[in-house]
Image (cartoon, rainbow, N blue to C red; front, side, top):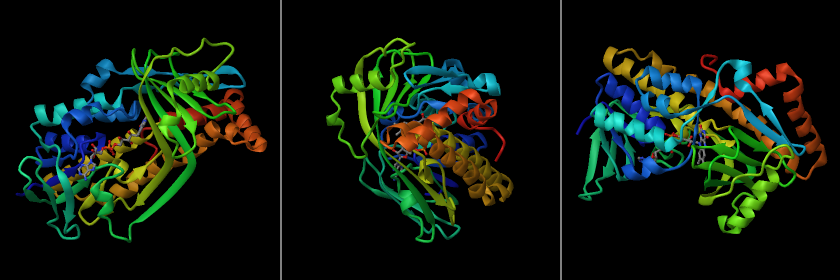
Amino acid sequence: TRCPVVVLGAGPAGLTVGNILRAAGVDCLVLETESRQFIEQRPRAGVIEEWAVRGLERRGLAGRLLERAEGHSECEFRFDGRGHRFAYTELTGRHHWVYPQPLLVTDLVREYADVRGGEIRFGVRDVRLHDLDSDRPAVSYTDPDTGERLLVRCDFVAGCDGARGASRAALPPSARTSRHDYGIGWLALLAEAPPSADCVLFGMHPAGFAGHMPRGPEVTRYYLQCPPGDDPRNWPDDRVWEQLQQRLRAADRPPLTEGRLLEKRVLDMHNYVVEPMVSGRLFLAGDAAHLVAPIAAKGMNLALNDAFLLGDGLVARLTEGDGTGLDGYSAACLRRVWDYQEFSEWLSEIYHGTSHGDPYRAGTTLARLRRLFSSPVAAAAFAEQYLGTAGAY
Ligand code: FAD
């Protein structure tokens, strides 16, 4: 079979590209290794930046999000035994949207498959890419129902299959991957408990970082710094709550509301960036091209930025023969990618500098933190990077 674009992966990046193509009447096929039910329930990100919401809205993809997402305008740093509110909307006029990734993915699949009539195959196996340097590349996969090996010829492959997909593995050895390992783990937790505050909390404590991220009226995400590669079985519920209460304690705030823990996963904090994000007719987008540890909640936002640029570039090329968007695609994406990588580095030091055991590092970290509350210029710079900007790239 033939199809102008094969999209690998039905995450935020792949589904957004698929939707943009379908809206312009360009046929595409989305291939996904998991089931629809699985991707609609996989808990991950929850914070979407305002420019990304506007980007979805412009493409007709934010209807349910705008009805249901919560706007956040403040966060709170907890250190020195007290809570310090940081009102970023007051400084910038912009806010963060909290909308869990499974809800966004559910909306995007519905719109793509059920409304725009896009084709998608779930549960495919052994995805392979072929002839990427020719103008007739192809993707082959095993059909989950028949066990048959199928080949689809296309003009372009959109590699949106995440950190462990087939696209990145298909890059030639000449593609450069830069890596950074923080040497830190985070125990990612989902609690069946209402949020304990009306905003995100960051706890900087000598015992390690702790985070509190509201995800809705009944569910809250928490993070606890732990050794990289730690075993979640080392973290029975009692220990988790005791550490969360300790690391997020503030004399002027009530204790956390505890609840059943629905997810307990250790994430090793590391980043990578592939440059360029293009090889022949393969265009990478999202986590397939770059990973950023969830330190600054940037990953899904970068995936959406790539998807907007790639979707628009493919439409221009396939409907008007205009290749400028695709030619500039990698460079345009990488400017925001590197900016967010740098901010994550900077923020990591704030989160982890006090627990390193080095009193010098703890001293400079606390100075950095206090500056956010004493210098309006430092506060404005932080707010801008924390929220991400629309057009500065
Ligand atoms: P993915 O969402 O990973 O989608 C890729 C898809 O491809 C998957 O559905 C996968 O099943 C499929 N696939 C894999 N292999 C193949 C193959 N060979 N062929 C076809 N399909 C394949 N980001 C934020 O912005 N804010 C946050 O608050 C935040 N919190 C996070 C918390 C956690 C615990 C984690 C793990 C991540 C978090 N992120 C956050 C990051 C965010 O989830 C990712 O950056 C985002 O999912 C990237 O989207 P994507 O579409 O590129 O990739």
